Length: 154
Image 1 (cartoon, rainbow, N blue to C red):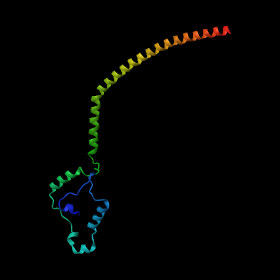
Image 2 (image 1 turned 180 degrees about the horizontal axis):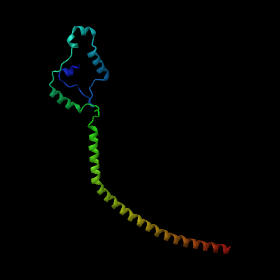
Image 3 (image 1 turned 135 degrees about the vertical axis):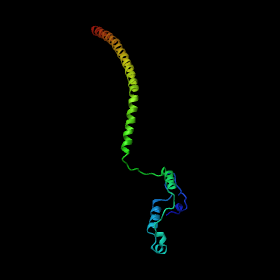
């Protein structure tokens, strides 16, 4: 076991919350703890004995809660998870029902305003087309008459 833990000291953590030891050091340390040196195992049988905890259960739980935020772990799904999702769906549904009338009213206002804008654009387009048609027609008549004059003079 790491001597830092025996002295009730926390291991030094880097920015990501991991110990400053690399994976190779950790594996080597675990192998040494578990398998150890056979020569030393026969000399100190108490090292091979079962370790009993002397830590108060409440203190241990408090410590677990304190460091849990620093640990990354996956929570296995349990039977209550679907209930949580059902509650979330109900909350979202209620929220949508509350916001739907207000949203519908806004959309209707936008629709009315866009309808008025499209109507004005349509009227303006028709006006431009009428004026342009008259101008193009007068230009056509003028150019045709001019062409006829040129052809008669030649």
